[in-house]
Structure formats: structure tokens, C-alpha cells
Picture 1 (tube, rainbow, N blue to C red):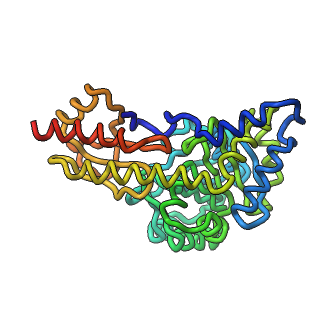
Picture 2 (cartoon, rainbow, N blue to C red):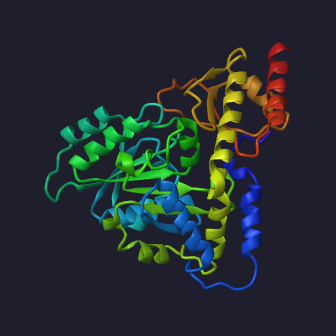
Picture 3 (cartoon, one colour):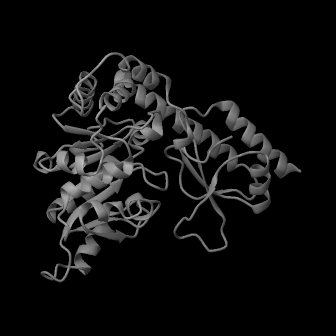
Length: 349
């Protein structure tokens, strides 16, 4: 009963098979191998456009290299107050950009609104060299609250960003879950909605260690190769990154995995909210469930071997005890049922 993170899940079978198939003979180094070339072609097909694709091994590096390509050291990067780049990347975006400033905006259920963005620009206009110029708007899809931006929401935010000459960067660690939840094309949720670059996650959804920086705005690509190398993420045995994406993307496997994880979260969320004293904090839209639970129920579940984390959710009263539970491609009905049965037994006892 491990609901601590989708990072705890094993490698998905098709991804492992692709790795094993690539583990034969020799290949050219540094990403010019046939596996990587094929994977880049799959990304262009997936997004229905000629995009530039760079493989890295972690989401933090992918976000940071992309942001470094989008802003000079004196620039400002706008993001939500719960963004991963703000709270959970140990200053990596600031480090890799050479000092660009993260500025946070108030979110609601993890999402930024056009009104909040407009108000920020109105209240904090440029002051020449005294204030860092706005260079990037970073959006997370799906968000840190397990919610998703609709196409129209992305279009509205991107339009405001364009009016202020900002690059729109998307942290897509769970982009697969968002696409599966909304049932729209990857193109509709990215470049067609105004996104300039996307950190496309694979690791949380069945890959071993594979992320891709997908750049739609070709004016941003000149420095990416150098920034990736400088960050230590130009793998010499690049075929193993490309191979993972070949197994992941072929025949829509990535969406099959994400849709299953989402379905398990909905099942878990529906069962939990039937219990006395358990309340849902955010709508369950992808594979993350956020609830408040009584202390005695939490203790009973932990004592029975269940893994999940306490969480800080902005806007909740200090007395509320919030928890995050995450499902993955490998979560099954039996695991959900065992967890809910234990919870129900405690509640009825």
C-alpha cells in the first residue's frame, strides 16, 4: 500500500523491454545513436510539429536547463506559490540561470488565473534597472495540487505572457496524466495553447530515468546543447535515454499508463471520501489525492504498513491535517481495496 509517490513505482514493462533491446552491441555516443534519433522523431509526431528535443535524466535538470535558455541572469521567472521549481528544487533554477529571480504568484488549487497574472503586472511595473525584467511564465501541468489547466486556461495565460514578451515554460512532470485526464492532444495542451517549451516527464509514469526538454519556439534552442552539457546531463550512453522513450511513446503506451494511474486515484478518492472525518481538499483530476484525515485514522493506516505523506496545502486552517496520496501505473485494484478496507474497519471500530 504505497501511495507515497509515483517515483516509487517500478519501470513499466515496455520501457524495460526497450532498454534490453538497446543493450546490444555498440552505438555512437552522446545522443546521436539510432534509438535517440527515433525517439526525437516520435516526439515530433506526437506533438504534430517540428520540435527540438533534448533528453535529460531528471525533472529538476530539465526545468533548470530550459529556464536557463529562456532568461538571462538578471531576469525574473514568474510561477505559482506551490510550484516545484520554487519549493522543491533546492535553488536549481536560480543556480542554472546564473541568478535569475523566481517570483511567486498566488495560486488556487495549484493553478494561476489570468486575473492574478494581470494584477501582478499592473501592480509591479518595470522600474528600469532597479527591478528584474519579466522573462518567463512557468506553469505546471498537472499542478502540484493534482489539478489540470484546460486548453482555454492555458491560452488565456499564454496570451497575457506574450503581451509582456514572456517565454511560457511548462513543467510537465505529470504531463501524461493531464493529457489522459483531459482527453485532448499533446499539441493542444502545449504549443497550440502558447507554450514555448515543455519539460516532458517520463520517470513518474513508468520510465527508469528519462525526461525530455521539448522546445517549440526555435528562437530558444541556440544555447540548450551547451547548457545541458554544462549541467552534466549530456549522457555519453545516450541510447538508454532514447530507448526508454521509444518504449514509452510507441502505440500510446504512455497514455495507457497515465490513464490507469488516474483511474486508481479516482477509485481511492471516492472510497476515502465516504469515510467519516475524511474530506477532499482538491478535486482528484490526475493521480494525486489530497485529503484531511483524523490523526487516529492516519496512525492506524501507517501502522498497517501504508505509505503516504503529510502535506502543506495553502489556504487550509492551521489545525487541518492534510495528506497527499499518489497512485501510479503499477497501482492495482487490490492495493486500493486493501487500503480502503483497513480504513473502513478503523472507522467502524
